[in-house]
Image 1 (cartoon, rainbow, N blue to C red):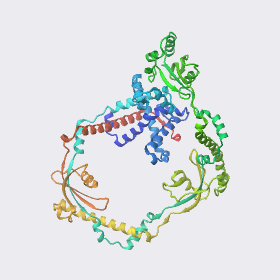
Image 2 (image 1 turned 90 degrees about the horizontal axis):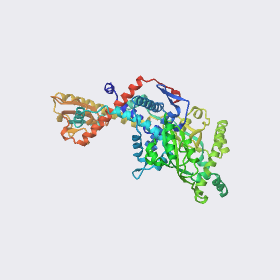
Image 3 (image 1 turned 90 degrees about the vertical axis):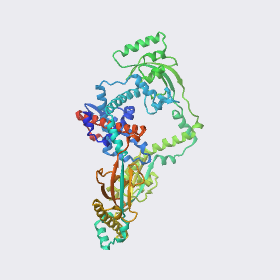
Image 4 (image 1 turned 45 degrees about the horizontal axis):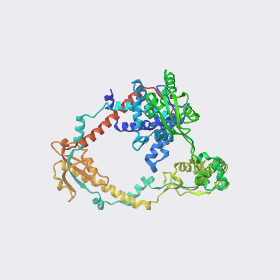
Length: 627
């Protein structure tokens, strides 16, 4: 059945959707819990809910990934598109379906496999070896603890194992590979002639009436675009912070009040033994506790019985961590232990039952006032500016709304400068305030453009607001005939010459098909005798090459074709012979590369066909209003 579906799968669609699926596999499983619980359901898949928090996190992950890839070309407005939102949701739905199938098939990721994934992840290694402290630190940076990460990694690994198994069901056979190689390495005997359009320009005469008629017919193509200049006031935390005055007394008091900002938190090092939730879990952990009380070594027992694959081989060692990293119950137990070497009682978390041994304490460390003064001043200014920003933001909204005819009152009350933009159009702009699409949208809105009112407050970021007012509006206007007539004349001359070249070329083409000798039909140097070219040839025009390889394979007689090139020239082609690629000349590396490419293409089509078949039999409900 999968073969039948695959034959109908569209290659580019498979690539596209598989690409989207890879995003949640790589990222969402790790962070999906960060958004917290939500009762809003975006979709249900066979009765299983996809919550809005999970969807929003997935969308943010995709947005962040694209920002990293596109850098300065990144356009955040693209992610307001319903198509993008739907694609992200589709990826979540696909993941739910695949996970459900994997569970039904009884797939399982063993602790040994999971441990190997973690141990061999480069981000968790130091000098080529797995480093426990680095592992904990890297997870803490994104707000994760090892237990949560390992649980989510297990889910993602199960899903990836299923997709991998589906993709392995198809391989490109030797016949398909050989056939493709013969085509890929094929060469053709190509001769061609050129009728240059430019050589016919001198014979073209355009009357002024033709130019004027063309201008009248296509007048809308000859418009000076609508343009706009706006005045605006800008409220930002960065600018406010520059105006905050400081003195040593205030900064010293701020240092005392916010010492935790300049002094690192206490860190603790612990080892644990985990028994995952199950019918015998509590009795199992109690027996382990008795063995510890009987004098057995904690690290040896952790290696023997702990079910935390990330730490068991290390004797349960979790490295140093601070508050806010681990599960709350686990963390409270660790920081409640008074001295190194002491052990907790049994601790219950969502991951199971733990016994914890405190193995180290790092006291808080920090900078003195003099060492941290520049940081203290920057943070002081920032905090004061943020408080002032939120106070002024409300006032900005009120003043600009209550005094809608200009910006002067709001600017004066808030001590803000009225700035003036450069001239910009409705289309995307790259200079000044108008490079923000939100600004352009607001500037050309009915209130600002037609009613001459202040815009609503535009939030360019969490710490930057602007309000606009129209300064100067220039309507789109018809360009004078005299200013565009020369360009229209040249355009019409070129179009006429191109037509004449085609007419001349078509006549020559008919003569060649009737047996006329090509050399006698073309002007000197415009006929190029037959040579053998392959698809990768760079000496021949790509347009000529593409057309020559698109004509039918000649049998007893040559194949002829003609086309107009982008430069207006007309090209007459003669393909007299075709030689398939010689498989003996293809080296093993090239063959293996193409084999891998075909396998990927087939397997991705197979995967998409499999997902489509799951969707056909699934009950999927989408609440589009929450996208």
